[in-house]
Image 1 (cartoon, rainbow, N blue to C red):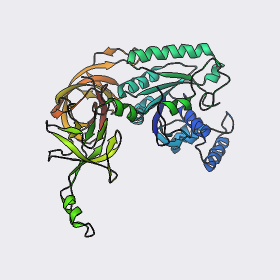
Image 2: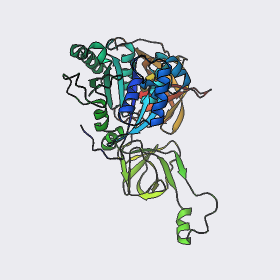
Image 3: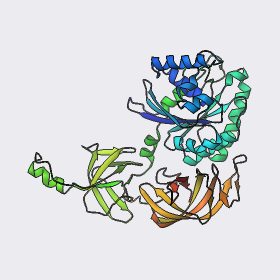
Image 4: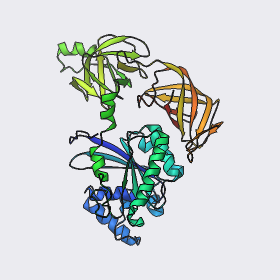
Length: 435
C-alpha cells in the first residue's frame, strides 16, 4: 500500500535494537545522506571523531544523535534522542531509542506514537533475545509498520544466504507475535548501503531502500481516520470567563456569552459539522453545530487534530468524557484483561492498588489477577504471580468506575492504558486492552 504524499505529511518513526547494533550510526547516516545536517554540525562531529581516533574513517555518524555527554563518553545511547528532518516528499520525526535491556522502557516511550519502528539486527548475530523483546513491544503497541534492518551486512561480505536466514527467522518470530507486513532489508549504516542510495553490492536485493520505505508508508493517523470511528476524549470545557472585550459587537457578544465548547485531541476517525454524536458515559445523542481548529471555524476535523466542538444540546461532558460517533459507543466496562509492559523496578502483584489513565480520565483500579508472563525466548505464555521490570504479561484489572474501553487491536487509542503509582505518581506500566 502506498500513501498519497503531500508536503505536509508528517511521519513518525523510532529505531530499536540490541546494544552495538548500530542504531545511532544508522540514524546519523540517514540524516547525513538525506542532507539534513547543518555544515557547522558536520564540522564539529568530524573534529570530535578525529580527536577520538574513530577507526572507520574520519566521521562517526553516531555522534549526530548521541547528544548526552555520558552517551558520547560511553559510546552508547541512554535516552531517547528525537530528531526532525525532511526530504522533498515528507517530513519526519525520529526517535533513536536505547538498546540496553535496562532502557527498554525508553523504547516503549519512543515507539508509542510511532507510525513505524525500525528494529536493527546485527547480520553477524542474527535475531537475539533483545530483538524478540523489541518485536514483542512493537506487537504490544500495535505499531502499524515494522522495518527490520539487517545491519552490518558488509561484515558478512554481503552474504545473501546469511540475509535470507535472518529474514526467515524474523518472519517466524513475527508470525508468533501476530505481526504482519514486516519489511526486512539489508543495510550497512557505516558504509551507507541501501539506506538512502541503492547498493550495487547487494544485487540480490530488489526491494526499496530505507528512505524509500519511510517516504511511501501511510501514517497511523491516515489509517485510523479511514478505519476507526470518531473518538474525542474531552480535555477541557471552554466557557467565557470575565468581562468581554468592548470592541466586540453587541450581537457577537451575546453569542460569546453562550459559548460552550468541548476541547481535546481527536484520537481516531473524522468529524463534520452536522454529524450526530454521543457523549460517553451516558447515552445522550446530539448534533455537532461547530468545529474550531486553532481558533478558526472549520467544517471538518480528523485524527490527530486538536479541536473544540459545540453541540446542539446542553450535555454533561466534563474532562474524562468521550464524544463518539453516534451508534458506535463502546460498552462501559468495570473490568478488563490487559497485556502489560512493566516499566517500574517495583514488581506488579495481584492485589496492588493503582491509578489507571485512560484517555483524559484517571480512575482508581485494582490488579485483581496476574494471568501469565510472556517468555521472550520461546514467546510462550508461562504461569506467573508477579511481573518484574521489562517483563510482558497479561493481568486482570478492576476499575472503580466504568470505562469506555475498546480492544487495542480495534482502536489503538481507546484500548491503551497507563498504570500509575497512587502515592508517588510514577508510571508503573503501559497496557493494552486484550479483552
